[in-house]
Image (spheres, rainbow over the protein chains, first blue to last red):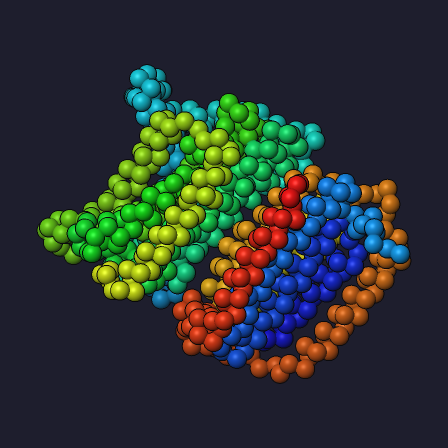
Length: 99
Length: 362
Length: 164
């Protein structure tokens, strides 16, 4: 398999993640689409790491997975706090800061 | 056809296939026997007869249970989310069976002139594979709890997932002590370093042992919690939540959850035996030298593994019928406030020991 | 053999990603995302990064997704409501922009030289290789990220408390 096969898969998954963020309205589904994008990036990193033969790309993926965990935890805490306030997670309804 | 098996690739595929068949079938067979053992041992502990009518000593009770489960009506609640409701038992069973793929059941035997290691796969990250399978086992329970569309099931599923994720931490941390001492993630290497007498096993806290007594204790406690077994069986508590996450399940789907729980118990027991109790080694050097190097030694070693796992399973059943159930907040407090710091302390002490070369390496 | 595995994994990964973004029930979305993460771990295995594959299953699919599922069930989120459906312009524009992004990706990927992947020496994907890099060159980022996890933990607990 050539690296561009893996990179095309990564690109497709990333685009699907972007589509999810743009189209969906529930906050948690948007968070899940962001996780999808992060994973697509991870796949690209591992492909490049394999191309060069070093373990550097894998270290980056290690850090990205850790960051994704931290971000998911904090993001979900925000969603819970918002849900307690507004009884909804629809991002169209969360417009308190609008002019 | 038969000479494809004598090529290297064909032989490997053939032996792996045979190993998978043997392991999966014996796992499911042992599960059936475990139901009988559980009920008889509970009878002994509670000073009553267990099942003793179906066949001699009630030994055909599992067969009767199997026929009963097959013949029961399979009810799917009308409001349940059907695809996930039907998939959930499989989601619980498959990771439980997969975890057994990295556990060495016996030594490397010689078959038709080639060396055949008695593990299904011998990968570099073997322990991590078993942990990954344990992590994936949560999904079956959570999906079962949600898709049943019932408040008891949802509460049971949520509690179960929180409990399993909390104790996964303790499980993994208690294993890292063993990994530090052995310097490898392969179960076969960890077992190889516990060869010789039983004083070499990882559980004993002296120089030739592995100093992992605390790690073993934490692993056993976390193993009880991971398999949702009393005293940690809040998610399926019969008197608290009707039946927890499998309230709405009947017949074969319920028995699949039941079997998955027993397979998880077997995996916990096998992991504990492999990492802390010397794996397939008999622990008696005079016995090893008396048996020589051939099939006699290998058979005795496989039997030693099975005997150790059997003792562990008996211990599981014994504890279940002796200790009372933990309340849910006590359970979570134990996991986060006691088990986790103790596992970290164990890791620290083991690290110091390895740094100062106070452990024997193989 | 590897080609068959690659194409079936691609099919499964893209199908589950589609379920994630198109399914209305968030629980089914979350389960599909967990399946997608396991497929991506399969890709890592094909790329011989076995330690990262196992780490992905344990951490990402086994812990983060369970956390997301837990929150979804705790908040008892129903389907995406049909009372106020998203305006068609939002969906069309989203699809258009995604297609444009995919085109840009296509052009940049085609710039990658098409040599087959080198067959690396054995210690490429093992824990030892990763450990050497992580505790060698990347020691300070490693310590900083542990600090970041601590901050995230404190932040999450504070944000989700009912009363400070």
